[in-house]
Each structure stands twice: as structure tokens, then as C-alpha cells.
Image (tube, rainbow, N blue to C red; front, side):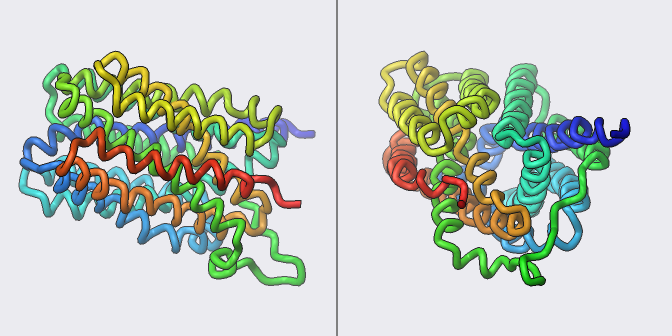
Length: 388
């Protein structure tokens, strides 16, 4: 065996980690500055939810196309191109908020578009690498994403405390993210695009007709809403409902992301030992408990404990759902695209739903809508079993 062949798994694995990490950095960088953007624009919770809806709308637009584009152009080209679009769009949002809501909404739509296509492409590449290694390491790639979000959130807390402006912070972070990803995708391995038995390819339309794929999609939607609600609203809930400072709210956000990182890093050992179904059922219960503690906790320290359990419980749902969708290599791009499309509906409906409930009750009480989908996810876990 040649040196190139021996080193290829290490190089491709490292490259996939980098793409996950820096997508997380980009997301958390923007999320850490949401309170300042909201205050500058004078938005109510429901208005903020509608602005954030632009991200989900962009993602929903790109996701149905992503599987076909990945199959045609390859995950390497897609991730590199979307990294450039993401850096440009987030930079535009960081500059545009000085001029009003409309530039922010347009920029966030493009940010969501790039995020959705990037997500599908890197998950397809991650599934290829996972199969080559022969271990359930998908959640560790998503742990890389969480590491990036923690780093971005902690940096955001420090930058907020230092009084550095939103524009300088976000633009410099985007330059770092784009440069790192464009270089890292050179280490991607070729996608597995072998034809279906009897010739031809498996279309996205066919994947939309598969009951198992649709059930996995609904399962991922539940966990995506659980994760997305924490990302979008934990710091807002701490500031508005618990009366904390902006820096304290950002630290709770960072704790939530750190708990997700721990769950995703140690998850493969649990998945290989116990299987997908029991592990995901247990985590759904933990996430549900943490969410209820966060909502009904009598003090800020209790809310921090709830955020920790909430993040731990939400950790594996999205990555394991993606891995389940990619169980069969030839059909992976189409199925991952379908599952991601359904899952991202959480980001489409979640912000306005919780924002609306936040206007009429409180943001914390609005988060109870997430609890109902977590209960549903427990019943859907059998769909994650690998096909025979």
C-alpha cells in the first residue's frame, strides 16, 4: 500500500472536520450578535423571528436542489462555492443592518441558501469518509461543527464585552471562515456515485416517496427545532426573562453548544455499543427534561443547568439522522437532500412560531412548542435502524 493510500483517510477526515468546524464558527459568530442587531433595528420578538425566517427560507430554497447539484458537481466544488457565498452574505448582513431591515433580510436569505447547500454537500462527503473508515463517526464530524459554534460563541461573548462593533467582528470572521474552507476542501475524496442496479441514477423525486426517508426527515425536523431554538433564543430568553446581561446570555448559549459538542464527540462509542434507537430515545428524554428545567427554572443557575441538559439531549439527532439517510451510498445524495429539506423546515417555522408565542407570553414559554416535537421524536426512532 502506498503512502498516499495510507494517508488518504487521515487527510479526508481532517478536511471534513475543518468544513464542519468553520460552518459552526460562522453560524455562532452571527448568532452571538443577534441581540445587538435586534436592539439597533428596534425589533420585537415576533419581528426578530420574521427576520430570522429569511435564513430558513434561503435554506429551504437550496435544499431541494442540493442533492442534484452534489451528484453533478461533487461535494468538493459545492462546499467551496458555498463557503464563498456564505462569507459574502454574512458580511453584507453585518454592514447592511446600519441601513435598515431590508438589507439584512436579503443577506440572510443568501446566507441560508449557502448554508443549506453546504450542509448537504459536507454530509454526503462525511458519509463517504465514514463508510471508508468503517465506524459510526458522523456525530464526531457534527461535534466539529459544535466545537466551531462554541469557539464562535465564546469569541462573540468576549467581543461583546470588549465593545467591538458588529461589522468588524463578523466581516473578519467571514474572511477567516472562507479562506480556511476553500483550502480544506482540496482534501475531499471522490463521492461514491455508482449507478443503481440495472443502470440509471436514483432521483430526489423517488426519495420523496420512501416512507423510511420521510420518517427520518420528521425525526430530524424535531431535533433540528430543538437545536435551532437553543441557538436562536437561549441568549434572548436569559436577557429578557431572567434579566441577565448580554454577556451572561451569550455564556448560556456557549454552555448549550458545549454540551452538544460533548454529546457528539462521545456519541459514536454509545452508538456502536447500543445502537441508534435506544441511544436517541434516551437523549430525547434528556433534552426534554433540560428544556423544561430551562423554561420553569426559578433562577439563572438553574436555567444554565437546563441549557446544559438541553444541549446534551439535542446533540445526536441531526447527525444520526443524516447518517441513516446515507446508509446506501448510491442513494445518499438524494436521501440526504430530502431529509435535510424536511429538517430545515424547523428553521423555517421555528423562529416565527417562538417569536409569536414570545410576544403573547414570554420567549421561555414559547419554547414549550419544542417539547411537543421531542415527544414525537421518541416514537419515530425505529425508522433510524439500518435497512436490511
